[in-house]
Amino acid sequence: MGLLTAALKAIDPDWKIYNRAVSGSKTADTIANFKTAVEPYRPSHVILGTHPFNEASIDPQAYFENTAKLCRMCDAIGAIPIIRGAYTYGGYTAAQYQAMLSLNQQLDLLGRHRIDHMSTLDNGSGGIIGGSTYQVGDNLHLTDAGQEVHFRAIDLGIFTRGAAFTRPDPASSGAWAVRSDSPNGKGLMIDSTTGLLTNPRSFTMRARVKGQASAGKQAVAYLSAYAEGDVGNAAPIRFRNGTGPYDVADNVGLVGTASTVNPTADATVHDIVLSVNHAANTIIGYIDGTQFTSGTPGTVLAPCKTFVIGGRAESGNAFQATGSTFADIDIWASALRPETIADMYRTGRKPSASRLFSGVLNLGSPGVGGRVPNLVHNGVFPAISEATWQAAAGY
Image 1 (cartoon, rainbow, N blue to C red):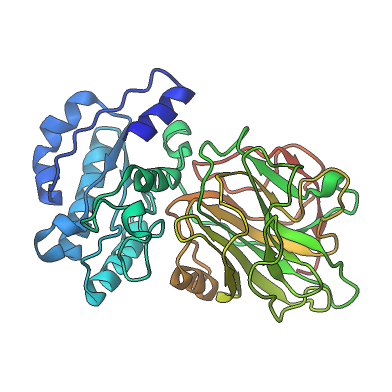
Image 2 (cartoon, rainbow, N blue to C red; image 1 turned 120 degrees about the vertical axis):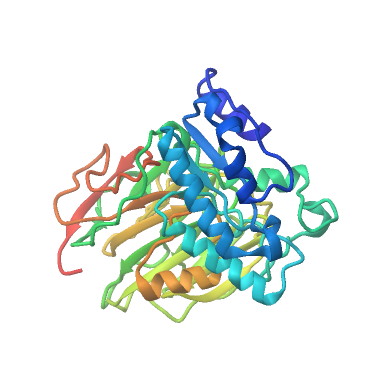
């Protein structure tokens, strides 16, 4: 709570944050205490920090029903509810862990803000990754380092951009391509100085990309993420095609192995995903919902400030993916779980929790510079500091 308080006050010193949490409370207790513990403060937002672990027998159904009721109680007083849902606990059975993952999916169907605090530290079975680095020894409560990981998964835009939230994403009716004259290798650049208010340590970037049947460019970047202060100074973490096939690299070089998909000789549309997990110290690449590479970064992962789609943000280097076309673009402030990425490819449904940015590139002329006109306004809408695209037919 201290990190969130400091961050919000840095944006606006008039923010007031009240911590009314009671350790060990069940959702039923929160409902019973809502009138006295919440209503008198007339809050603009209410973080529902409850954990299914506290429910009798870790009952996900009771948690879901009571959380839905708490959201309606927030509506009644004009407050925006923010859900945490299930997050890591080292004592889950295998069945309980799967039930917690399903619970989070159900919570997202409520159409409310949810912070993804499961993916941030999940060791693959619901426990907390990293041993004593992130938890105090009880496999539940976090150290200061663990709390910072959770904080980085919060998009501050939830608090600063009003009550708007993710509406159903419109169908993509077209795609855009990076212009051949795009300056400094940039396609579309999302810079936290004008958009994202929190620089995530862990994140996921995703786009649908169509390569070329022949003669496509090699050594270009499709998805790039720069650490704070590194734009133009060092090679970013990036999803690229170094020698033809898609691969993943950081500022040291290739991470893991290259894929078998070569966008320089393949005009098929593919879902590409770049996932960075700070706690696990891994960088992972996915194509069409399936992981093709995973590796340890060559340097310590730092919070990322600037995200570039369709190129790199380095003066004088022509790394733009000219000739390739892009459609749906998304960024999350957490490393999405492999199953979540597979489900997204299979169903087309994008997870809303901790989603910082979503853009559907529809038909029309995007022009050069300024805001991209057809981005989904989802309540956490960042400004675009540069966009150099052209409409692409036949996607």
